[in-house]
Image 1 (tube, rainbow, N blue to C red):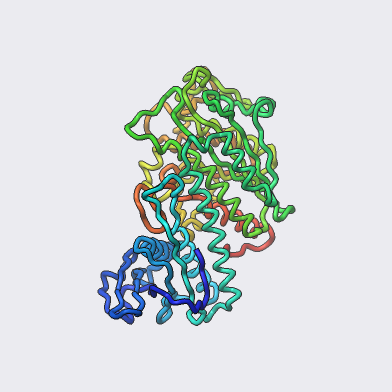
Image 2: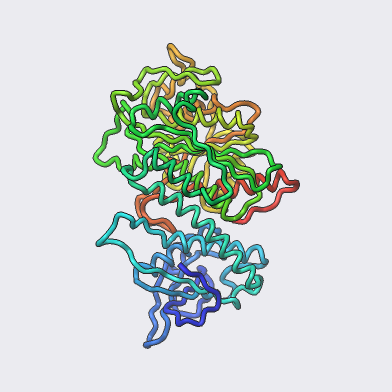
Length: 491
């Protein structure tokens, strides 16, 4: 999808962002100016461009996420009506920008939303496949705060962020007969082969030698071998190491505690945390970010088979802890334990693990916000970033008394609690036991935010790509903080 500046090509549609309670060159009711509304105003004569009014609500309540959603809704509306080009028109300071930074933020949010709104996972469609593209033109006169070079830089940044997010969406949406632990590793190697990223794959005997027994146990029931993939990107070698840990269960059938249901297609999305890490790393590499990051991707299938781990099995970890597998569908935390131990061995100063870990977090928070546990300063920074870039988080408690739920009669820990309550909290408590002091750590449970059930904002039904921009933005902020003097990250 092309984004141009001051194109001379004929334009089919003029897109106007509109605010509730403010004047607009065309007749439009106040209700149509509310955030989320997109309204067509068709030209009266042949050759006259149609107008698309994108509601942003009240200016004083404007957020960058509302701008992103307006951009996405406008793009999807254009695509549905088979329109191929539009020019964004900012009338009377519609961007609300009183500085260069504010103008750049507004535009980046709009372009991100626009590109993400045009995303379609059409790989397996034929008769119902969406065709065509929608190009966006910007007028330089609307962005007096920015030079053309600065305008182009903002567009490039937004495109890089959208590309990383769409990469995460593609992997989460992919079907399990195509994306399994073997192809997952192959795709990772291929994606980063021509980029400044070091790749090492631990599998087979290397997993045994390093005591990665959680991975080995979870993957035992699949014909595809489990692996831990280590991806190293060092844009700045002198910085303290940040580790990003992602769960990549390419299909979660629950192991011997088999999942049941009329449609369990979503089980293919249990690698959403890993997709977020990969997408975030992709953004950092595209932007040549001055960061030092290692991504650790724990890859396995969780399937029932004669060789699969059994409920009541005991897993022994290199940190000395033993774990009773009370339920084989609590597999994600067993993988993350291995990766967190490995992160400490690599010398990570801070680690973020992210996973589609529990249905319980979705019950508590719904599909629009993920839960986060752990270090207070890291949590605060991530929550603030999420409020700006739309990948929101809600701080959750590590209730010490709930650790009693994880006591085992014959091992150090159970992998799931003894009750059905507070499952997301007990999962976080379990994971914490594998975090070595003094490493800073947070755990993000994104099981609810990994997908939307219907088109909304700048996401179609399916994978959201949640977490890619969140992790990339945190990595940049972390690096800037340790370079000396905290700077505001571009969102």
